[in-house]
Amino acid sequence: MGGDHLAEKKRKRASEKHDRPSKKPALAPVAPPVKVQFVENERGMVPIIASTPGLTLPPSLPLTAYTKPREQQKRRSQKHNATTSTDIAQSELLLQSSAHPKIDFVGKEGENELDTLWNHYAAVYDPDKATLQLVEMRRMTVRGCVRRVPRKESSDQEEEEAAKTNWSQRTALTSAFGTKQSIKAIQSLAENALLSNSAPGSAPTAAENALLSSLPPTSSSPSKTKVQAEIQAAKPLPQPDLSATQPAQVYTIDSLVPNGASTLRQMPIREWQEAIGAGEPVLSSSRFVAHRVDHVVNSGNKTLVQLLRFIAVLIEFARCLKPSRGGGGGAGSTSMAAGSKKLPPREDLRRILSGAPATTSTAAEGTSSSGKTAILPDSLLDALRRKFVPQGSFLSKSDITFLHTTICALSLHIPPETGFSGNELATDPADLRDDLRLDYMTVQQYFRELGCKVEKPRESEFAKWGVKSKVEAGARRIARLRVPVEFPKVSRGGRK
Image (cartoon, rainbow, N blue to C red; front, side, top):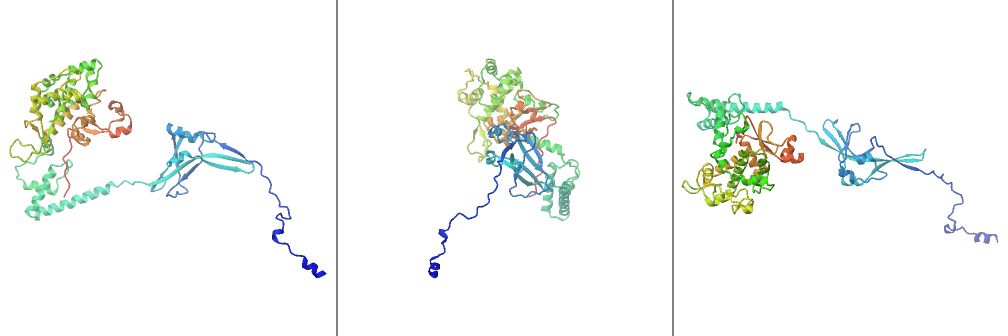
């Protein structure tokens, strides 16, 4: 009986045991509720979270902070709510450091477009007081760039002096022991050096000494000023008066206009005066004329009005030239070279120049903006042909350049609406670029050849030239003529 009782008593399986433990577990104490607060530091700085992609900032690197008001457009894009800091929404921060010997560090906000849609916070938990304080942070990106080190001028000067000394020794040896061909080459280099813009007062080189020694004693070498004047006179440009004491005397109106005042008196200006007096616009195919006719007529200076009308005639004269077909192959004196242009028939030329103040559609009909025909006399057409068409029926490339530079010189006498300032004549070459259908670099080079300085407009002259911002001023150029006149120097040319 005892054995049977032990055999019937079996061990319980794991699935039959109760899941609930026999001992009651100890419960953790319940923490008190946490009070969340948003802290806004209106008068102080806020924390910064900065990323340094590709860099490892030194831990002891000092950063200087600069703030400026945030732009109105960016300020509107910020979402204002109860958890947005007023200081971050209204101001922009910039971090900068030049403490590193070779690298400059700059930290900026908003480099990533997604940063403007996110708000970053720092949380400070105090278990004793059961508070969680939230502070909004600035999100910035710090980048570094290698600082540029200026080159030492002394080393450059030493290299130039060494190169000059080496070249002088070679030329001296060639002059003493070289062949006739090599000596002739050195003499040619010396001739070019005399025509170049070498520094005044510098000692002659060995090549120049060899050239001077080979010349006869009675001959005298031309001076640099005389050579510069001869080169300037050979260019297709109006001849300046270098003894002038005022800018208006360098290129006088009488020297630019054929027959001077008598030609200007033949200019029909009554149509312009009547239209401006009646408050009507003066239509013109020239941008230069259209942008200046109002204040020139209102100034009451009759000579300036006649001069502006003459400039309009020259612009139409330059536009009506037709490219020549081929040319340059004939042996006769009347053959046209490459780049030449021919005049239209005389009656067509008269009609085109007479309709200069009209629009493009009416210029072909020879009518002005008021409906009256303003026919130019034959004496004016003959004067234009004598001055600008010496070949008779066509203009060579040099004649066209002379026509364009004469128009540029005349434009300097037309003042802006507020008048000239100081001892200078000035104009904006942009309108002539469009009227003469030239590229901007060519028009600027024309004014430089006339002795003008082509530079950006001054900040005090933004209103005079209609400049609205510094960005626009960087793209604009003003040609200024001052006394004494400085022309482009003759280039020396490099060694081949």
